Length: 227
Length: 227
DNA sequence: AAGTGTGAATTGATTCACAGCC
DNA sequence: GGCTGTGAATCAATTCACACTT
Image (cartoon, rainbow over all chains, first blue to last red; front, side, top):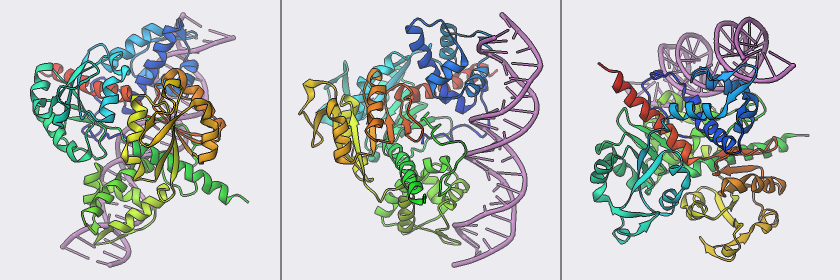
């Protein structure tokens, strides 16, 4: 799963939104945007919940943490709710992102359109392989690893994406942190250690498949046990 | 986060391993493998926990769900534990995987080495774009979408990876399910609906960044509030 | 009549703390 | 003496169910 263990025990920040809720807000936001594009003006908790893959009680409880933005008997105003969730998530700002490691995955990330439309701007690509310097990916040059600190400072990077092999990841992470980056998205298959106050999330493709395989296996076990 | 809502309420399968534990087992497994490669023969819960990014009480509780494989006063035998966790996760079998959608991301997934070494074998690539048929990626031909059902049946596919644009994802998912696939890893940014009994996990890159951004924002809020 | 917002109840996960074993 | 395994205690998340609003 994705790494948490980041917050000093039990503190529930200024705005007091539980972790589990924060993790679902982006989903609601996306569903709402797509409703908005289709011209839908209001939506009930039942409908929004169904499209988001949760039950309506959970949705209402989640939204209640942001404040009271629905109308009883009617539902939620789509664009108003997009606005509120977007603000809570910090989507109004634009976040500068650096991607370190431009292999297959880094390449895919650099080209991924979903970032740009959501307030994230990939401002630099960095790779250790000298053969790739100057190469052009997604309208960006690939810079040598040695430039990392300068790029972070000059471009005001606040989020670093680690898409290197496992062997390089901790070093890259340390350098990102030393340059002042305090949020890291890690695709390398190891647990990064970072000082307190730095946020890390991990996306691990093999892990996801293993979790699926576990449940898949459990299904066959069950069948094997039946009369 | 990743989609759950998959299990009929509260049922904790035959072997009774909690979800939260299952999600961490792959991490322990990976750390153990890397210890094993470095020749380490035994490890304490404290050490293993530290490398896995959890505390030792959680690790011991997690492992206790698999049975009692440690030695008091000593620790865990690395290779024995690898074996037991591997078996619990179904890593001893080999799982045939089809990847649908060979864009940047599908490409990266097809080439991702982490799968092969962990019991997953990518056996087919499928894409809707006729321009790509016959193209060769990671030692595999790209097949037309029309072949999907046949490929699943012929190659004994049990896990489908959806790496298509959102617009195509639900259709692809329906066809995977109709062909008998019961585990799906979804990279498309929407919630797939599937019949009961089909497992879905979602990896959403933009969502991960948004969660990071939320916490990042909260940090600045805090600073702004100080005297 | 329809549907939100929320206390109270429940279920699940984490942490504590220590008895038991090597 | 050191370290596992686990009940008991705590903390977090989910669900229930209904008062309240439009």
